Amino acid sequence: MKTLTVAAFPAIDKIVAGAIPAWRDLHPDIELKIVSRRASDHHVAMTTALSSQSNLPDLFALEADYVGRFSLGHGLEDLRRAPFNAEALRPRFVPYALQQGTNARGEIVALPTDVGPGTLLYRADLLQRASLVEADLTRSWDGFVEAGRRIQAATGAYLLAHARDMKDILIRAGVTPGDGIYFGRDGTVRVNSPHYARAFELARAVRRAKLDAKVGSWSSDWTEGFRRGGIATQMMGAWLAGHLNNWLAPTTRGLWRAAQLPEGSFAAYGGTFYAIPRASDPATKALAWELATLLTTDRRLQLQAFQQHDAFPAAVDTYEDPFFEQPIPFLGGQAARTVWREAARRITAPAVHKQDRFAEEVINTELDKVLLRGKDIPTALGDAERLLKQRAHR
Image (cartoon, rainbow, N blue to C red; front, side, top):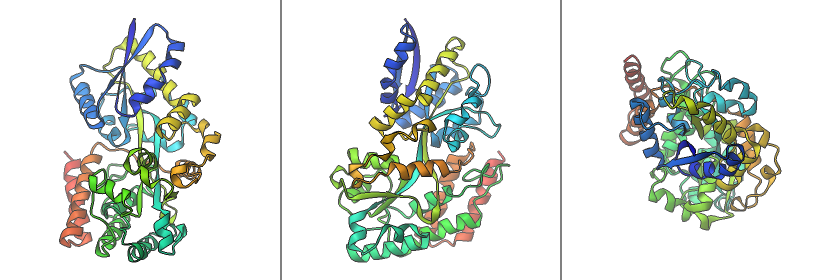
């Protein structure tokens, strides 16, 4: 029996496995083989496979944060070309999603399957104890910080896990179409700007007011902060609500709510794509493309992944399904998927750049110097700009 190999990571491996019956109906003579690794190991393995052009899968999953690194080389198929013709699928996806899989040359190198609309998750019980309402958190960024002061005074809880979270969401919000998070459309470094200065200033305000727990995402202290009510809010992708419910803090069921980001901001936070290696077996490329389109455009499979794995769909023909209107028990019966749907429709996709991961490290290092050593913000951003310019010209 002929085999089509798909490389993935949790929970994308389960989503692909869930599509096997639909695939078998189309191709009973072609077996799907799923190779699954931890997300970090998977992306390292795919980097190695593409550079060596060996042990290549026919199709592989790719997290949004890695798209820039993978897309600006020449290891992935340009899906605009025949026989793929991905441009014809553009109307099928929420607008920003396909743009995330498009590189600086205009090549579509990855097809979106799920997206991560940014959201503000907050503890409704802590707000109530502080005599606050949701609008106190969302009206403005300055109001968000002030609400944090009141929450801490009333409950002892921190506003945020880490002041860096403030910076992370602000630099992603309001990106001009065509620009990236760190680099402009023409490759210019855009970190020494009022936009970044405000993100740093608000992060510093959080730290100076002692409103952050100083714990990193995915750490044990981060998890404990959620479980014990020590952290009042978290800004991240909508998928975090599912993680909180399923394993991070299931005992807090009913206490959380979801809102749009403060000050009318909208930001992308994660997502998953499928890509086809350019050097993979030519005989399987058409089949790999057929599987990719099945996983990303089949309405039933997109909804199945959403319902079973909290993978917010990239396919817009799912957005009027009644599932979006259903109450979410973990969020106190709130129909929060409608909040996330609105965000997904309004997000502007940042362009990807091959130096995005390095730029993130540089910006985080400079922010740490501001928060921990009192470095002034103009100097920090100027130093980051110089370093990124040096790296970009290599």
